[in-house]
Image (cartoon, rainbow, N blue to C red; front, side, top):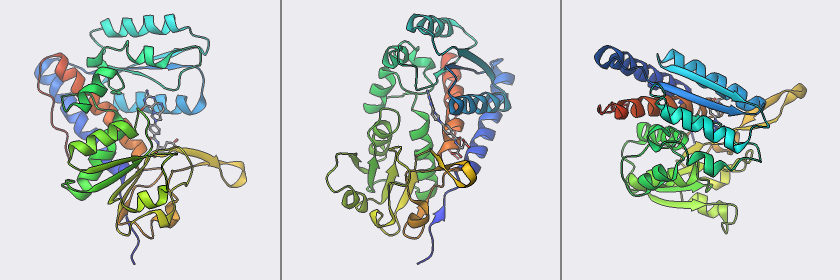
Length: 297
Ligand SMILES: Nc1nc(=O)c2c([nH]1)NC[C@@H]1CN(c3ccc(C(=O)N[C@@H](CCC(=O)O)C(=O)O)cc3)C=[N+]21
């Protein structure tokens, strides 16, 4: 059998960012509006700092305004809520992202639910989760949106496909299941307590791994020809004491069985940031009562 085709998320994300940049330029010319994204980072986690820096850089490259707020590890919940409320009231800010995870003294759910739902470009507010679940216009979480874009691009119509999502987080598993249901897939959400997980996965035409366990999904969990989306970003010990990134899928095994597969790095990660920019553009348009551009590629 020939190896799976590799779904190039990095290249797709670059094209999506370019499209966002074109629409931002048009919005400036036509409506005098520059979308703005505020990113809040609490604490000094090195990986989070890298992500926040990349987000800021790509925001500026797309022609948007970037506002970065770095708060100390010892920030209180009240201080963080005050900042969110200031950003809610700021007309130059169309999107707000509070980087997760937050230090333990802070109640994440309370913070996320303080963000104005119309500025909630992560799509984590209960209003957006509820809107997505009931099929209304919502800001959709970036990672699931990125997965859906790649699946639609690769497979076209998804209706009737059996999709198995491994992982039930509010950030990826649950919203992605909602999106796939919206595409008329037959959706199963599997997780650590699923009985005979490998057998459940082997039913999938579309298999998504979003569990945060390096190389958990093995080659013999995959139906031959299936499309595999690997959401995992796990930093593991590599050669010569260096760290390297691996997904939740054992890529070397999976590539021999799947029909198509996303790599790590270069798969869903870059799509997440591109979709964040797309959501910021959408939020800015809606704030002005303008139609949000269709960014389907
Ligand atoms: N409120 C919130 N929203 C988030 O969207 C959010 C968050 N908190 N907390 C942390 C996670 C993680 N995350 C990533 C985004 C891009 C890459 C990415 O671009 N990864 C590259 C590799 C980057 C590298 O080399 O480290 C790739 O997969 O090719 C990874 C991870 C967003 N997150």
